Length: 417
Ligand SMILES: [Zn+2]
Image (cartoon, rainbow, N blue to C red; front, side, top):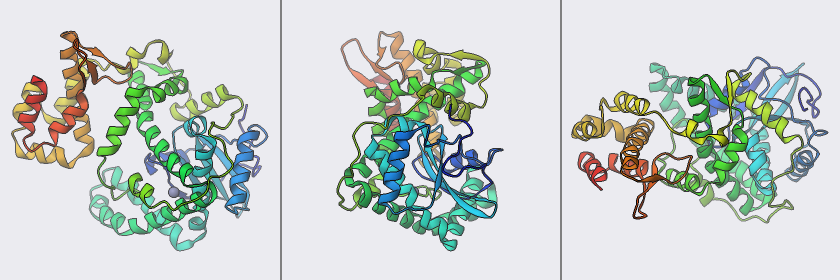
């Protein structure tokens, strides 16, 4: 077991002061971890318990000339960040690493993530930089929480300070390239994006099962299977391609932009295999507890019954469709889409449009399944294959229809196809 052993600095943590978010998951998520009662982002990963990981961290720290000791904490999501905490007057850095990154990135990619994060030390050390980052974090939180005044003022301030935040990220990417090479950094950027999307499915299982008084006992083993599923990967790739430009709250530039400006750098000495982890199932248990708290209710094995977590009841799909558009079914949706107000609202709100595309796409999938079509993957409900072998991603087609010049006609065409 790993619990309680913070070996880089052998003491309990105070309250984290500044936080630099990373990866594609919301900064908000990271802040939520830090605001836990222990003031720690997660269980400590002790070098003695994870010698291979510790070796990799030491090698990266040496390459980027990061001499100060730092603690390493486990977080349950595919993300990483560097946080600073004050302890008896002394400042200490803590590197938080997500279990999905530890398990599925190559060592070269993991080294790139670590080199990037350690680069943020310069921003934590700089009073002006850390003040800006702290303010951006608080504003992003307030805006996400839906406060009216911060939304107006906050968005403007977030936009104005975004360039500075982006320049910090570019500097950290450069450091990562110098230490680990262009290929490793590019691979890490793509892999973390892919994981952020795929992990969304796993978070969906948690939500879905919670409603049934249950929890996914094999979340991480099942996530491993999902991450390898070509249908899931293809879906993530398309969603990534159609992603809109940066939100004002984003601390990082969009990945295509980061990839475009990466300098050339030679590869480091790290392998293309994931870092060996000791006590893997203990880590998974710890991460699950971080994610869900002490698990309650019926433990469900997702891998034994994928249908239980990935089939949303029809009532629920209709409820989402009604809540987002007022429509009771696909016909009604086509009628309502003649309204310019609804068209504009859906174009402007990615999250709402995604909810409509997902729920309407799955309702259409049900209709087709009743006519003999079948699901292609147990994990993705909206992708079906017909008796003649035609494959359709219905959520994707719906998404296209909702952003078409004439959404009502486009939707009718999708339904009639
Ligand atoms: Zn960063």
